[in-house]
Length: 129
Image (cartoon, rainbow, N blue to C red):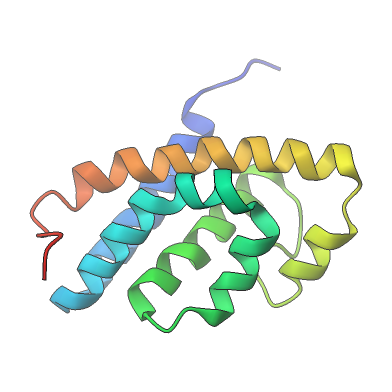
């Protein structure tokens, strides 16, 4: 099996395109853009479990949209079930160390893709309020 780098780029592009097209409210668009750009830093600093826990704690809907989209893409790319739903935190908690670290590595790459595609898809969204 040959690795195709588009394996991660295509679902990220699709997820962000859908979010961008479905959102009309300026505040929510700014929140989405900000969160998508910050995903890599958050994930590298705090890890997947905290990011998943943050999903339910976020009060800004635009940021929550992006975190949910991230976990949907991660689940799709890795084929690890129950990452994107309410069982996601338990799924992460129950992984063995090697699987969790491998998933984190893939998550970091996906987060970088989110940052890249956000720059392209949200180019006309002003980051400042």
